[in-house]
Amino acid sequence: MANTTLVLGGTGKTGRRVAERLADRGVGVRVGSRAAAIPFDWNEQSTWKAAVADVSAAYIAFVPDIGVPGAADAVGAFAETAVASGVRRLVLLSGRGAPEALNAEERMRTVAEQAGAEWTVVRSSWFAQNFSEAFLVEPLLAGELALPLGDAKEPFIDAEDIADVAVAALTEDGHAGEVYDVTGPRLMSFGEAVAAIATAAGREIGYVSVPMDDYAAAAVTEGGLDAETVAFMTFLFAEILDGRNAHLSDGVQRALGRAPRDFTEFARRAAATGAWSTDS
Image (cartoon, rainbow, N blue to C red; front, side):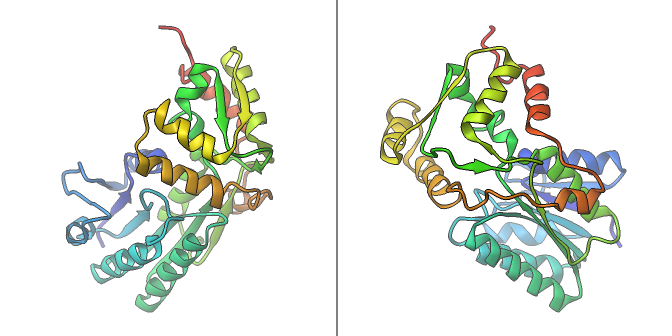
């Protein structure tokens, strides 16, 4: 069997880390992205067959987010293409609290079991790295993060932990048929997260809760974001980050035999790289 693993979203927050870890273990890696040597595009199903050719395992990260409408159909169709090509192990990055994500899990699970392939779900909460590698960076650099979230709390998960769990499932026995609901070790509001970032960065950074309509308008007029991006962001805030995920799970402990990384550890690491530094 080919010892190559396809990593979809292989240049993203979790995929990049998964690909690096697999390479360190001597596993052949094929990065699945539109710019890859063998391109993969979720919106172009004609690219899928070549991407899964001679691949034994696949890490499935749906773009832009597995919670958006249509994600389940796409994941199910990809799983069918993968197992038909001989992929024997599927690891899906899913999302907590999103009905479409649960549908995607079921679609992948059904396809894999019918084909006699192994499957694992890594069901993730909000990435800590969204504060350091995504659209939240600019307002943090400016000194104030305004979001339409109130005091809702999240069990922020470090993308390093997600990658560790995914790689274990991709390369080791004993993870087939498991759903690993991965969270950080504690609940935090976005205000508490910003305070931890400010401490790590050695800067004053504030947090303010704003109405959804005001946030969306400011994202366009002041943030310069396009309407599609703003619609996606408001979808996440309204549908996912409403407090429904304010509980902890033991997925990291079950998969790796250790506790998950704390948000303050993430903040220290990110601050050390200059993620929120205003120094020129």
